[in-house]
Length: 97
Image 1 (cartoon, rainbow, N blue to C red):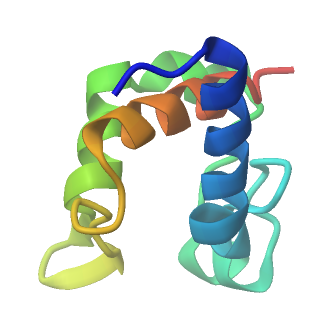
Image 2: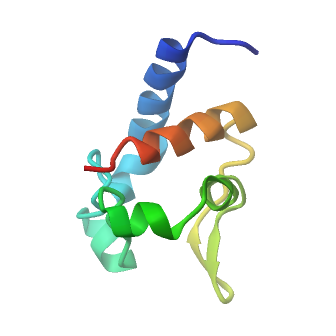
Image 3: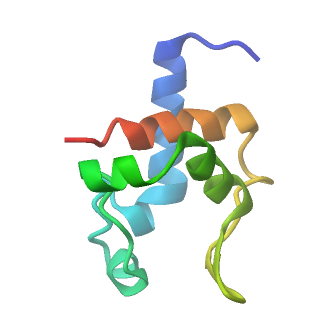
């Protein structure tokens, strides 16, 4: 489904707030109780942004993240469309300070 860029950005922001901010924080720094416990990376740093591709961010969001058999992040494939996940990848890229 085609959506204007502004609408996609707004939707990505809302999806971030709904699905991601509890752990990753509204600002992407991962300084929440859950984020600290899980040792999440700070998405606002160039170091993080350069360490991961859009394809890897997309896959982590869609398929989830495991550490061995332990699930660190549940997959969002059943909650978000590919287009919504792509917009979230763009949202993560917007955190670079």
